[in-house]
Length: 95
Image (cartoon, rainbow, N blue to C red; front, side, top):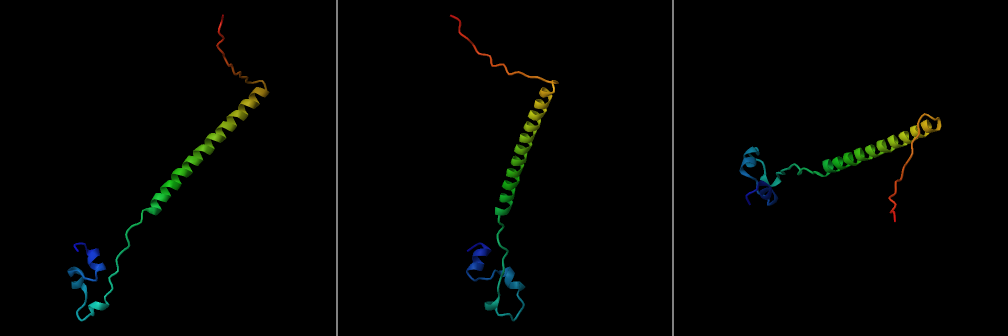
């Protein structure tokens, strides 16, 4: 048992903690409280939520820009200010 945690679990009090106990204290009634190990679940979940939220915001922005652009082209072509054609060129084999 080299680690202090193992010593505390086994009920042994390390020497540095034993020196801090006031004289005359019943060692069998001493309770040593340790800090809980750090949990990384919260920061990882927060990072994933932020990443997913930013992707969702970018998709919504792209969709809105596409709808606005399509509406602008429709309005301009209806008023005669702009026209566009789609040319689907096909290659015909000549015999």
